[in-house]
Amino acid sequence: MKPREQFMDDAHGLFGDAADGDDKRDPLRFRTIWISDIHLGTTGCQAERLLEFLRATESDTLYLVGDIIDGWQLKRRWYWEQSHNNVVQTVLKKAKKGTNVIFVPGNHDEVIRQFIDLDFGGIKIRDELVHVTADGRRMLVLHGDRFDGVIACAKWLAYVGDSLYTMILKFNQWFNSWRARAGLPYWSLSQYLKSKVKNAVNYISSFEDALADEARKKGLDGVICGHIHKPEIRDIGGVTYCNDGDWVESLSALVEEPSGELRLVSWQEIMQLKKAGKSKAAARDLVLA
Image (cartoon, rainbow, N blue to C red; front, side):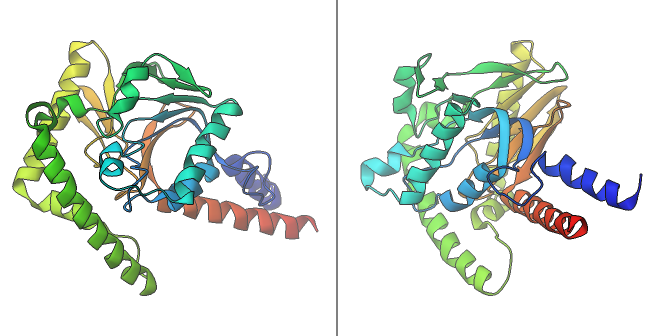
């Protein structure tokens, strides 16, 4: 293949037919996308970055794996930015245009659980379900909070922990504003603390093992969840455990490629790919001019 033809083929393969730099017509395409723990209604929600992600991607199916709206925080203090409205409107628009949108409520938006098995605005509300990948693997999809011992046995303690977590996120916002001004990338303090505190590490490990065991009991190949804000894909005793992360700290999602491959992506990665695709499209236009 000639260099010019190869270049054009690369641009087409990355962003589809519309390799002309139009953000609305050339999204990154996946078979399935899972996102969770957005926490709309809180100051920690990274709604603007999530909007960039949603506008830069497209999928046949979009799973909202719980804690999309933070009812706990909204009960304490009303906080709702226009960007939070924009996230909701963007998801509704995707559903209207044919994306299969499935909302699996979590503990922070548990009020939605009274509408399980109903559909609203093209969005299906489900408690848990099985997703079959393109390569035939059967994956349990659920938020995961009922496998959290703190939530199940001492919900008051979960509320206390949520308040402390909110304080850490506020400090993290200030710290990352300084990092951005210094030209440094985003960094999560709470993720760092989780990785260093022994009890937090043990809690996460127990949660992951419990979810994998649930999938195993159901005779499934794996499980996809959210809840603990820790993006992960790993094998646990022959079961594929996947956590799609969150949009207050890791800014991550789980995606399924057309082949059925599951992988984690971050906001930073998607934005870099988008920028690379636009650069290729601009260069292609110069070649064709």
